[in-house]
Image 1 (cartoon, helix red, strand yellow):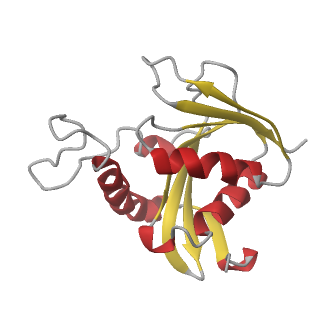
Image 2 (cartoon, one colour):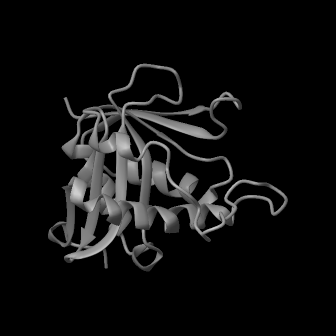
Image 3 (cartoon, helix red, strand yellow):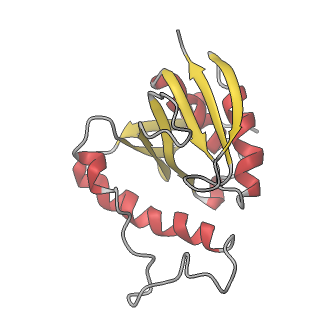
Length: 176
């Protein structure tokens, strides 16, 4: 049964909640680790058995164009979204889904789709969502989640240039 809209809460993360996103970011990167070839240095653990820091994390609390969001389901912490204005395509964009994570426990239960709908409708404008070429699950999820969002129009899929981005890039407009 898909979650009721009242079950999902998307809230701007305060500076005091930054450690929550930083901690969940470790699980997010861990999920990506299964997509890399074993002989690659990508997604290796550091000496402290962590994946290290996300270079842009601090900017989400310092730059107006970056929006750190916490995702809760029935009051329980379920994930995060980091929205920015970076365009993987090089074309003009208002918003980009920089990073998006929902705990495995809540996947395939509609929590991620409901969170995407809430985020996109809350922040109207021209969007991009770039998907890693090796992330087949995300390639199936994102087009469906975006298309199911009320007010989405002009949905198009571009291919990254293979240098700046490898994989599909969804471009769409939400709202007026």
